[in-house]
Length: 290
Image 1 (cartoon, rainbow, N blue to C red):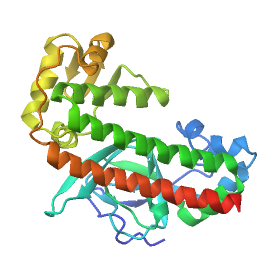
Image 2: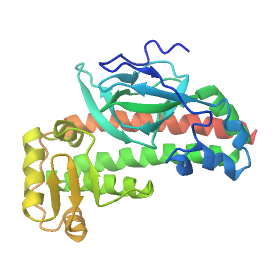
Image 3: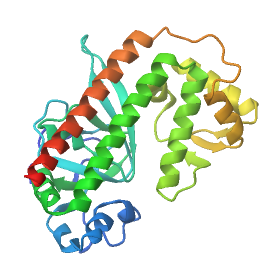
Image 4: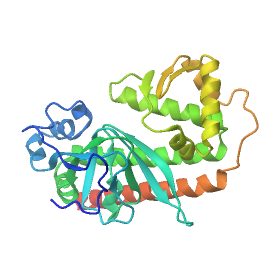
């Protein structure tokens, strides 16, 4: 299988790794992934030949590139990725982070990928042939619903991020970010109150629209107030009501808008990508109805 152009080889290399005869059977994420979805319609056998062996991606390597013709999608087996979109001046900005269990590249159903996907740490992804997935979705309603739900969630998340960047103070943005991570871990059956930040503080700042120094300052403020506990990248949420109070805007200081113009353009690109993904799935749904 030729993956040239799909990633850059890093220090650890990238490529297929050995997989068990039934790689999905022992996967922690199987209950939220294709095995569970296909089981709803008794189509479990359709999984054979659809999901390739796990592929290893080195830290810093690119799995997908914006503008690249789409022929694969991926499910993140372990590790973490960030999504980057290009700005008019040639720079790239982070518009999303992806954890184990997430779909990667679903916007490719519109014909091309809309963002670069870069590994934040050594990771493994399960490769899925996009055309086979589309074909199977026309025959398995549960799979079609699952794909629609995944892309709709991406759109809702991008819209929420646009609102946060445009109208929230930096402390509220960071608290929203932590609570969003907490929610996602809870959905995966992991601890919602203690987890590791896979991304650097610099990446968090770029994603949220403020400087590294501001990220460190706000983290320190929350730590000293006893709202969270920090040990390097390990975070523990100690006072959830206090976090929710900050998010609700209690005692909100004057809003910071220094980066609002830039982040609005960046998040608009994320919304554009998510909308393309939903449109691609809508065309698939129309084909099924016909």
